[in-house]
Length: 427
Ligand SMILES: Cc1ncc(COP(=O)(O)O)c(C=O)c1O
Image (cartoon, rainbow, N blue to C red; front, side, top):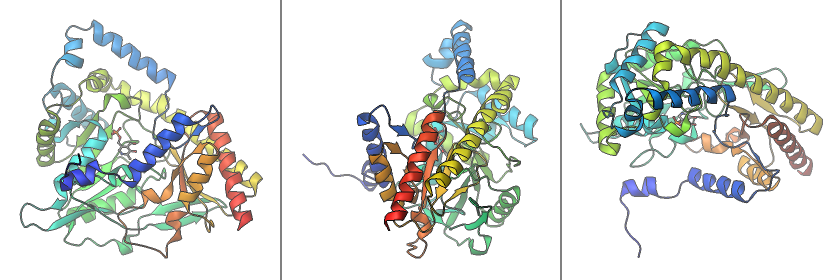
């Protein structure tokens, strides 16, 4: 029997490039031997000191009067637990001075669901006049998880960045404001900061300019703060957190170490927040309570800020520095020719660029997989662009996670360097 699917079903229930890649990665992981190096995922590291905090909180929840009920046996209101919403709002006021009340805060089932709701709320076919609107990505490469979220098709319009090279082996993407045009079909502007896949942190100036442009055109600026401050704080570079009454800021408990609780937090204009609450009620009645209850007293006491600042950030900063040193050593030793890495200002990834690579990043991915090193080929992150055959850069990059075991990262980088050198030598 073969059933017919709706447009929604076709877009979300069918195959997509990224779902094929995930299946491929999953199969490689399942069938791979003990030497396999998984440098492709977005899984945060399991940091022992942080895990001890979760263990302590789980024990406290079991002992607290009504703790179990709040954590697992009750439905929260669709927008989130009221005490949790108030705690998040108070943290934003006290830490950053933002004028945020509980009416500006909603919980979702992870950041991913927040984006699914936000993109389809603001873009797609408009209720008022039937026109189609899209979300502007002012800089790609951008988070692969957005790419297939439109319920009735493509939702994005992306602008290639300016590439600023520095030193022998570094570069940084900058927003190309000269080519950033806000046409009437643009519904919102969206950036991840720090950016997955590159570890880029948009500068304060870039963010201020984007916020100004968004306000001028009456559209919101969405900032995806999955790796940023106040938590998990995986940001190694001076950057001021930004929010104003036209900004939708998303946070997540995943990268501080609780991805299994599926807890996303959105801070935005009350009209948007109410809509997210309705969408949560329709799609899922309510959101998971466990993450909110684990983290609630840590937000109220401010401990979440010290965990981020004193444990999580230094942990990843050290891992990033080691991975970068290893990359320099590995590529130089292998004689891999021209190579560059994006400045690592935050998040969990090295973004490597091989200018003039004689094969595509998709082919490089396959060749590395055959050598038991799993990465993510970079072309997936360049979505929302018109065909740009004259821009080879989008097929010359790969993403490498450094959140894994240091020996895996080091050995994986050596395999990548040798493979790139071999590809160049053979061409
Ligand atoms: C930039 C970015 N945004 C959002 C998400 C979604 O995370 P979650 O749904 O676990 O909160 C991720 C996950 O990797 C991400 O990298």
